[in-house]
Length: 599
Image (cartoon, rainbow, N blue to C red):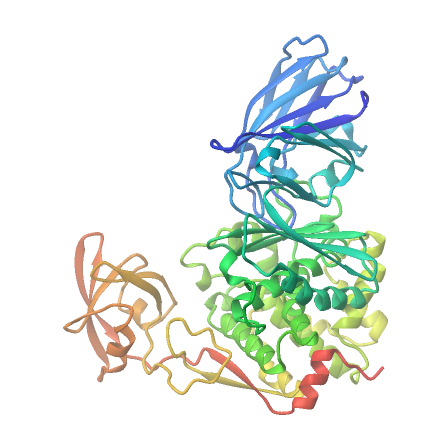
């Protein structure tokens, strides 16, 4: 189509991780046109400056004459001579092995449009075409994407696949995987779901799909349907990595290949695989709750700069509650295991000292600079809107039930959010939860949310949780790797206050908790703890040596940038920062898990 804006992409050099992109710009009434690249990708709230990977921009007109390109800022270019049409070419360096960017190597190519396709400002909201060239047919590469394909053509060596998008925003909202992969498809109420696993794998993909079916059905029943005809779980298998990013009709996932079930293995669900199912549940839930139900700032976001908003706790917090809760509702995990997960989540929150400094609304608003740019001291200064947001969502559900006489729950709240906002493409205001609860449930949750969102006070979760059949217990951790969630016969006696790992002749202090014994002793992040008293330490004996001490202080030896330091560390009882729940009333807890209400 000569008057259509068309994009063209192909792997140019696998060894050097380079894509070649061509943009065919039709004749224009403008003397010059402007092209820009997003600085961030929706769903990941950090300026990533994808423009740093754009190289060798060249432009020519219909007469094959070179046209001037002027760079206006880090991510915007102006091209002159646009009246007769322009062909722009450039290269994309693709070596970001994540769900957010672009990655190209010998096994597959993966890219998001936000990191590869420049936007033509003058084109506005009109449709665009995309041509993907698969020049690795001889290596059995295929293409997996939720893009709408209109045709394809092929030769012996390559194939070209033609897609159409309603506008640039749709173009950049469909990640693409090209390469060797395994695919399995299943149908739920007329919607086709595709599970794609990159590379050659021994994974039991059919079992994964069978386990995903009830999760997909649960989400669809909660929202009374699915907004797309097809959905793709595009999974990048790796040795050691984890991540997920939502899109309108797909998700890009990253997960360790050997944490997934292999063929002929036991049908039990180990915790590593459970984590994958939870990740799939989380990202699928975002199809409604983030991609369609969204804050006002995300209806037409400016992708060139930060879009600060205090509602991320609603979107990631609610979703983080539902991801594991859905596993329990569909019987993929037991009620006991779900109680353990709740205990682990609350343990994580209690061990975050930053919850006393940063409110949940602040955590959402400051995500761009604090949550996504964490360092070794962040846990002392910030709180996660995922983690605390999920805890607040749990407390909100219990509060809604109590205030309404168990006539309503967070399920009905999600359905109203979808009906009044998501299905109508209307952005939610900051007070949306308070307003909907008042209008539709005739209850006032404003006081609860004022405390939960705008203060750093801990919620009385021990009292709230009793109403759903659980009892909260606190203990000290049993080891440095203890995540909580379960009872333990052996727990540590004395506190330490640092995360550490073996390093040379001692242990490297990686992060430290405020006001803990090791901090009071004057240790710093990056120090190597060599000895406690007269004994050399390692990760295996450190806590045993510490628990065997008596008195009020002990001598420790540190190595700091080649300098030996001896100092005294106070001996203090270990903090009770580890949570587990006991199921006191199984029928009540089971009823809560299923979402039962009395309305």
